[in-house]
Each structure stands twice: as structure tokens, then as C-alpha cells.
Amino acid sequence: MPTTVLGLLGVLLCAVAVTSEVTPQTDFDIKGVAGKWYLIGFATNAEWFVTRKAHMKMGIAMLTPTDEGDLEMAYSSLKSDGQCWKMNHFAQKSDVPGIFSFRSDRWETDNHMVIVDVKYDEFALIHTVKTKAGSSTVLDKLYGRTPDLSQDVLDKFTAFSLEQGILPENIALLPKNDECP
Image (tube, rainbow, N blue to C red; front, side, top):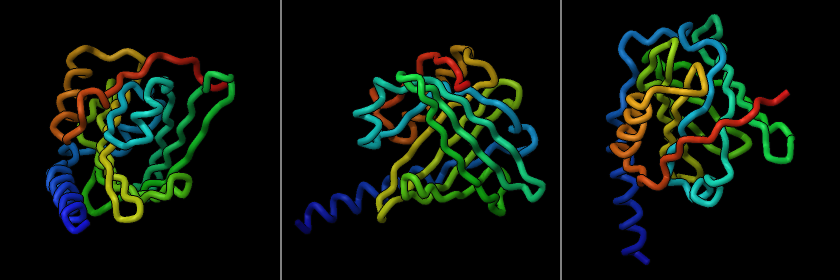
């Protein structure tokens, strides 16, 4: 048992060390991320993802900056049964532009979110560390202003996710999907 605990502590320390080096885009402009984004890429080693990734499809995120510099995030995705899955988060700004934090009551996680790379009219690469009951997982997402991105951007997302310790088989480019009505 002590060996297992020490091993898990070592993995956690490595994960924290890797993610602590992730920095936001220089000269981040919160107003530039406002509007509609398609969720194109999803990467995480979280157990729930490994079992569900085959059923995931592209969704929509609506990002709305507040006057105070926080970020309202509304997600939606059309499920195979025709129902619309929705979730909302309110991300609070930090002292560093491009870094936010939010609590997900649905998933019972505290989230540290970094907007790593963004070309405001094309794509956004977002890195989040989710913590629940003292355990952290990394989640990288790739958003596009349109459902299609260049191979260079897709490759950038894959390379970044691999650098964060995400296994290649846990990096998914999501199939296109109809939008919620």
C-alpha cells in the first residue's frame, strides 16, 4: 500500500510539473474569443473519456466575455437520440490574462484553464487541469471558428497534447455533428 501511494504521488507531482509550465498566449485579448466556436479536438487520459470517446461528436461553445474580464461559457452538443446536451460555466479571470478558474458542480471539479494559443478568427487551443478529491487530470481542447481546420492546426493540437502527457490513443478529432435546435 505505501508503494502505491508513493507511486501515485510521483505521478501527481509529474503531472503538476508538466502543467505548471503551460503559459497563456502573449497579448491575450478576451474580446477576441467572444462568439461561436466548434469543439473539434478533445484530449485527456481521464478514465471516463477512454470509455466514451467513440460516442463523442463535435459540439458548440459560445464564449461571452464580461465587462470585468471573466468568461461565460455555454456548451451544447446534439446527442444521437436527438436530445440536446447543455452545460454552462462561469470562468473567473486571474491576474494573468488568458488564465481562468471555474468550478463545475456537475462534475464536482475545480478547473484551472489556460488559453494557450489562439488565432481569433480561426482556432483556440485551451488547456485545463481538472481537480476532484485531490486528483488532477489534464484536458486539452481545440476549437475552431468553422468545423474544419487546417492540418497544421490539427497537428499543433496533437503535438501539444502529447507534450502534456496525453496518450496518442486519447487524442480525438471529433466527427462533425448537427447543431442543437
